[in-house]
Image (cartoon, rainbow, N blue to C red; front, top):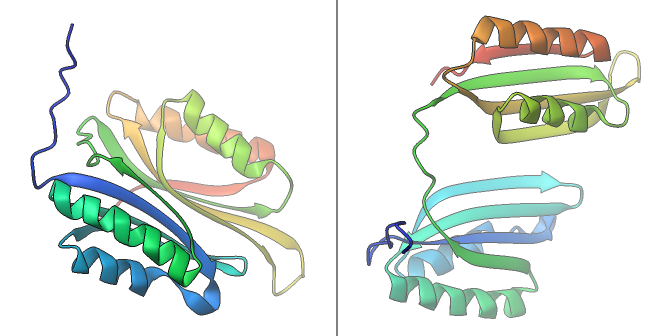
Amino acid sequence: MTDTAPRPTANENYLLISAFAAQSRSPLTAIAKRIADCGCNLTETRVAAIGGEVSVLVLAVGPWDAIAKLESALSRLERDEKLRLQHFRTGPKPAQPNLLPYVVEVVAADKPGILFQIAEFMHQHGIRIEQLQSTRYRAMQTGADMFSAQLSIGIPASTHIAALRDDFLEFCDGLNLDAIMDPMKY
């Protein structure tokens, strides 16, 4: 039996690039310049300052020869700019018409394992985490260590939303988490 996955067209080759550098030397400009110089385009970009570092995650698209040229340019960029860089070929994000986009926000007194428990709940209910941002901070008023997370999730369309919301809020009550789950508004 042969693989039925379609081959990318000549102009739709994708390269996923991940780079890290000190906050004073964000790699975004250098990477975006190399992508443009090689005849490729950006389809998605994420930038985050985490600790003392900046992370850049970029999805580039272009013809196969431009992607090959970009791979070579990235190797030089890593060496010349002293970046921690990783890249590999991938494909476009598949359409997900059977997933409903929702947003979850959680705030709680910080304790080990909160994020794991939230991720495990989502996994057990067949919910896909599309994006997640979490942080630990000190409450201004009390000085208590706090945890905050914002998640963009995809809920299977066959899921009974009211029952899922009840299960999630019960789960959060059991862990003493303050949370909301709302449809994503574009």
